[in-house]
Amino acid sequence: MLDEQAARKISIQGIHVDITEAMRLAIAEKLSPLLRHNEHIVRLNLRLHRDQTLGDDHHYTATGQIEIRGPDLIAQAEGKDAYAVLDELAEKLDHMLERRHGRRLDKRNHPHGVELDVSLPKADDAPPR
Image (cartoon, rainbow, N blue to C red):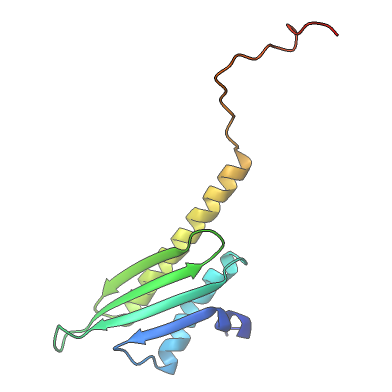
């Protein structure tokens, strides 16, 4: 079950869609593992939009935004089944978080050398004091 702190961090908005309690629980279940990846996540915004121009056919677009230190992570998924779209969106956001975490570790563990345009004397060539 979802804890209260994680539930407060997930914001769900339905556009032309009624978000039922079952859908709200499914969304929270799929997105709560993302909050465990990084404790610096401030908020996770999810917008589920149903396109009404297709008549009886349903076309859903889900947009997820992770508010985190640095630039926000934004992903989007589209499809005909709302739950499948939410699954795809959760996978995309998870992949983005893992990639971001890997980049941060890579920069921290493998710093780049500083390139200087001048030649520096070696320690052996330095004049004695």
